[in-house]
Image 1 (cartoon, rainbow over the protein chains, first blue to last red):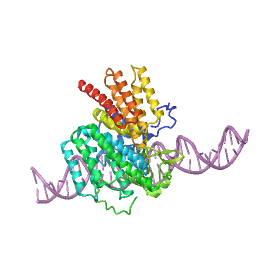
Image 2 (tube, helix red, strand yellow):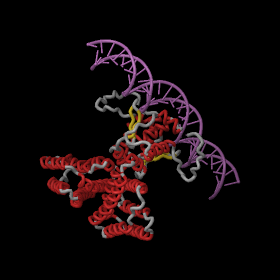
Image 3 (cartoon, each protein chain N blue to C red):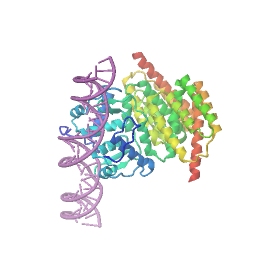
Length: 235
Length: 235
DNA sequence: TAATTCTATTTGTCTTACAATTAAACAAAT
DNA sequence: ATTTGTTTAATTGTAAGACAAATAGAATTA
């Protein structure tokens, strides 16, 4: 990108770096429909020529896209557009909110309340059965049930069967889980949690969107308030 | 990173690239609490020495983090952790779903239904007033109201006042808006949309979580079904 | 004091070279 | 004919060094 374009970019104060421009160019290939998920991109050498940039610049762009989950690369094989984003990028992003417990709790509530609506409509019998199992196992392990708790929510998240929102579930659940470990372990509430999970399960089984939402809301608000109480006690 | 580590990474089949490792290292600085949003990172030269990597590798990692919205850089000033992620990364990610109309519509519904719950609790009088204005303007412009429609939803998204979920709103709304432009312009429904917005507004004004959810659900499902009908007609 | 110029720091870009990985082609052995 | 091993070549991965561009802050001047 040495020349030619007479840079009439007066308006943009913060001129974009070349690598950022390359990122945008490659994204456009998707938006144009020239490429789609799964397609193989040209080799770095070819891209360098087409885009008129040096290899480091190109590779900065490709690394960015890979970290975003949009492409993936394999030595000797080449560069491909991914099928879906996956959860790694969101995990990385969440690191910026480390310690901001209220925001994380809210985000988790927000995402899960959105998902339960999709889930109530789309959840399969098989997934309902899986849910039932987690409840059963939770009943059998009143002392250490946090893994089954998380699993319950994860199943609901994935039963919404939506690749876009799906990517958000695991990172948020993991973050919340990690936070819970840091605060007191003494505030568990096995019976109450069981009942709430069962109520949610029953609503999902009926595919009752509104009831599922209500039960999930109660469940999540219950958890949020408990945590907020705990961290306020500490301070 | 020339040597030393005898690479006992037998388990991980796909060895991580250096730049990916650097990304993880820098993320850990956040998770450890050694750095937080707003902090300035060491210069590239220093990071190169500390991490034992070459400059291209380091810069690939930094570019990745910048594209993820986690850091931002300014010539001569240095590199800083961002205060929030912003909406660009999600816009980029969404490109991978270009054309997958059902998924995008669902994701939008999911996110907004999650947000309305937070919004119903946290929305301010000022934001309610803004909402009222968009409804008024929409009433005055029965022919071209799509911008006010989008604005209405955007205000609700931001009234949830949560930096994490906030980043998702604009990209999704823009994507949906763009899709709507591509399908027929003839399917607008001014009166119905007005009524639904008013119903949502009234629920928010009462800070009634459940009613706000219900009204928003009706509104979004109405829109989704309309679009799905249209695209099915075409095919 | 205020405006201007200079300087040094930091990020941005390019070039070149070589290393590492491995699919694919080929050869050898069974 | 099928498996197994070997070579080759294509592609991504890493490194080093140089220079360009932007600009905060210091130095200079009016």
